[in-house]
Image (cartoon, rainbow, N blue to C red; front, top):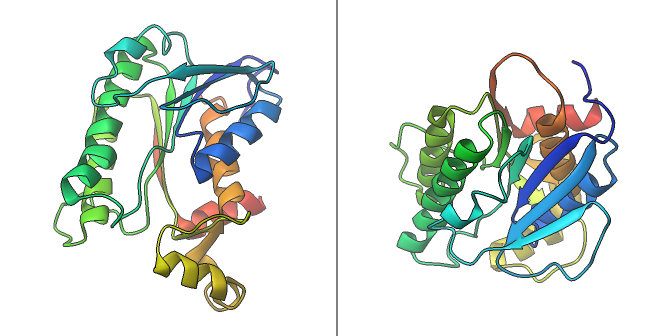
Length: 229
């Protein structure tokens, strides 16, 4: 594996105001091979950095207006998403599937050689047979991304993502998981991943230089191994 020349990689991050996307942004801004980071989202980040550019975009159901912003990019880290139960089933599918596919469509047209790093989830099912809506929709998004034609696609399927920094948890299940995390991590180490470790893995794999085409799915155990190496 050959690292790209220092400071030559142009990276897009979608969802930088979220937990994983936020860590991805901070890590990318300090990454020696990254010369520019364009954060695309619905609201401003509230800070500046010499490498950072921002593009506000309200409607991810139509990303046509982003065509120019997405031109000439080397890689994208896509962390846009929502929690099951926080929105209706129809909205969950729109955010998980439609927004992902629409963004990828425009990026592919503007930067056909870009790598795509996608935040999916454990249990994602590309067959569509699972009864779990989240797993079914993530699988649908994965399948579409693999078919769009990017030369390199990296799909990350984390299990429980530990927030690392204190936050307001989205529901009772997440509050419980955070409370029992120390014991859960000891008993089931391959079912957890710290948010900052996940973010670093997603950026690192996207910005590395590869001449051959590649499509990889990383389950939680593999993500942990990537971080350790």
